[in-house]
Image 1 (spheres, rainbow over the protein chains, first blue to last red):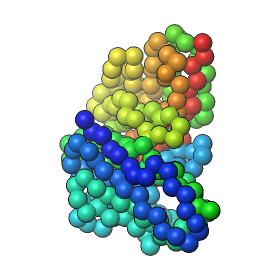
Image 2: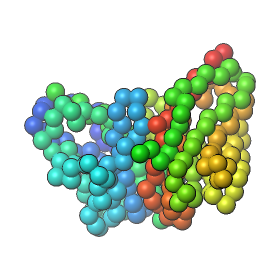
Image 3: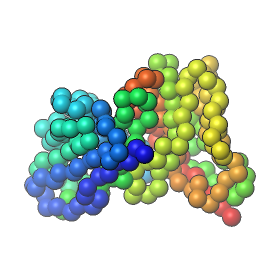
Length: 115
Length: 114
């Protein structure tokens, strides 16, 4: 149990376009979902926390108008990178938590490359 | 300001021996600690956790030790196997009863040599 999927796994886009990444909890209801990004050889940096049906809470330094997060259901959260630029190229990972337990279950990640 | 620190970026251990990965934290409000394993281009996989009310938790080849007074925890893997080669992240959470923000360390790359 506790499987999280992400789609797409890899995306290449042109500068200025928007990209949507989906995160789904496949076999459990995720009351909370988290979005991280990871730069090469660095740790996971938490971008935002989203709770189903409410606005996401963004970490300091993360532009909420650039990284739009929607958590419309207990099994789906989306991250939209708006007007992407090359510096947004990164590995984006989502995770989901169940109501009981602290563990977060991670998706496989999405590699975004902005040309 | 790193609240969770993994001071060793890499570690090389011979197959069959014990691997010991260390982690220090600064926030005394953390009361739940986790270890995650990550392969390249994949999401982290939960490995083992420990609550602050315990000082040891064991699961097969993996044992996590917690020293609250020293704000230090370690992950022991014994015996080490080639498939254990990965990046290991130590993480901590200030809330022990529900899904909450997790603070990750910078990771330690473990290499198991034959």
